[in-house]
Length: 578
Image (cartoon, rainbow, N blue to C red; front, side, top):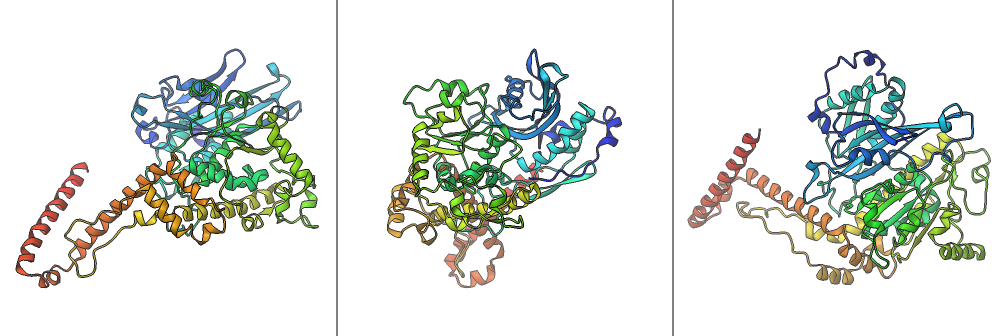
């Protein structure tokens, strides 16, 4: 939904060859590589150009990137005209095979793709396609989408020199400031973005609801949640639970842009929880993990993963995935999903064509109607394999949700009509509504953990020259028992069923809880150290000493001396690092 910035790099084209090469270290702060991938009729996907030239030289990364940079098929994406061009943006995520990524924690690379498919009867096989790819260790989707909308067309305009030119601009940027707004110059334009928080940033305390939902508190805050799940809005609360507890999910869509946007939207749903489950916005059979997943024996538990796919072969090869959601429309020129009942787009609006509020009965099949009930039973009986014959938006899951859809949120959503301009504007509004609600839902869900993350400061009149008290110890059983006696709180009690405690148990046992809790706990401990240190700096020593006995003064002198020596040691280490 981002507008393409007005930019001019043409003046630099003649100087591209003579310009100094970008500083590799400065470039690496933002991106690993800029690539052009070509589909060769004889040899398949090939890396046509790459900057830096050796960026894909390790562990077969060139093949992994090449195979992930094209749709599975181009036949259904293009209109049947004599000559036509179709551009699309999507993303993927791969394990980083480079030696520097080796270690206890698995590293990943994010790929952001500008794909151009051109259909022309005069060309061999009637068409061609190329992709321009930005590869980065950072999931800065809002930034790299904007940059691709400049770099992609520029590569098709002036060729390989565009990679070096844009890389030079990127290398000149200041270091990334995660969690902060930045203005990054590119040619005659500036990209204004708000970067997501760093992976080790714990985010806001669980008891506080961020005042501004437009500020990113997790990954992929720019994902078009409303467009991706427009036909499944009533299922968003179930999907939120599946993500919170770390359930495996297979996301099926007709195209890479639709499946990668849906996966990004799912990850963004659980902010500010640190999502620790492996996710792949666009997963192909060439991914090195496919063989392992395909070899799972019948009855073997599928690992926690979220996979976005377009190849329907995965419905058979990964049939042990317990949760399958199909999203999107086979027609890429229309992301609209008509309400059940076949109402036309024009009749869904007011008489003058202006946007109107969604009505709840339009969001899904009416579960109380005989027709809706029969269709629901048929859909469940056919299962995900029914997508082999006809694509439909649906969720197949054995999971029993705790959270109820919030009808007040759904009724605030706006039906945009058929105008693309209105569609984009209303999608922004609807995303803001959904984003605010799920941020509030997640924050309230995390609120009971607040006492275990609460910092303390010295009492007024007491000496700060003592070690801060430890944070309260956490024991899962005691936490659950205490929560059972207190209840879920006013906000959650209105939105959850009587089995709400099961959701907390699954969260505690799942893959997301411990990484999030450890991160929040570490941040709280560091914050407490900072607060007590500040109290020592601000204390009135004379006033404090006047209240002490001579023995207490001697003891305090020794303690103060110890803390002063500690501060001098810290200062010396800082100066040494500088």
